[in-house]
Picture 1: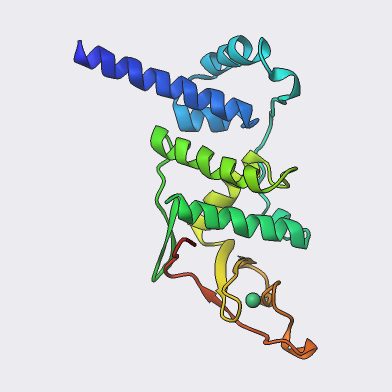
Picture 2: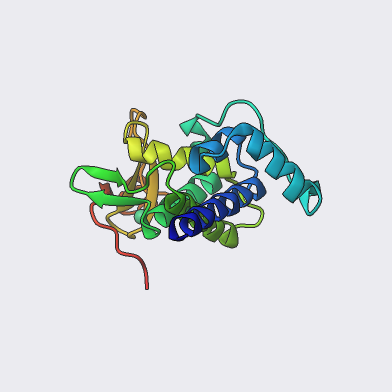
Amino acid sequence: MRVSDDRYTRDRQRLDLALRLIRHEARTFTIRQWTGLSDDRIRKLYRSYVMNQDARCILRHRGKSPRQAAFFFRNAELNFQGAQLASLFLMYGLLSGTALGLEARYRIGSLESGTLFCQAYEAYLELHAPAGISFEHAWFLLLALARRDELGIFRCGACGGVQLRDLLARRARSCGNCRPAAAGGTGAALQPIIEYVAPC
Ligand SMILES: [Zn+2]
């Protein structure tokens, strides 16, 4: 009896997370990755739970997920929002700062990690309306930060602001909040984030 109760609860959590992901316009592939549900079950869920309710404004994305780090450097606003989202990943425990750099603290396929990711993204949505970063771009950002080969986050030595940095760029960018030294500012260097302390 206990086993079947647990199974029921788990299945319920899986469906709840899938529904939450559908509302965020996640791709079928992403929903499958996080929930383990089959494509067929996701399609049925989409039809039965969403089409009859508030789906008029929900788009279904097909095709490939976004894969370009350059998206976060298109303009200052997207760069700022990306840095905020990265900070939220740290605050929600999806990433942690170590002496070697950022480390993944999520597990793909874990309902707990999937829920935490939704919570972090929803906290980001609270800060930005309209949001510049889609759910799929946010998911790409988390993966890229955990890989440490394309994107990183750094803290400005002068203002303490968290900055997103393109690790493949030839020249390191200076802090967007501080003016460069040539313009009379501090020209503060960006330092790797080793330990992140959530603001009060
Ligand atoms: Zn700064």
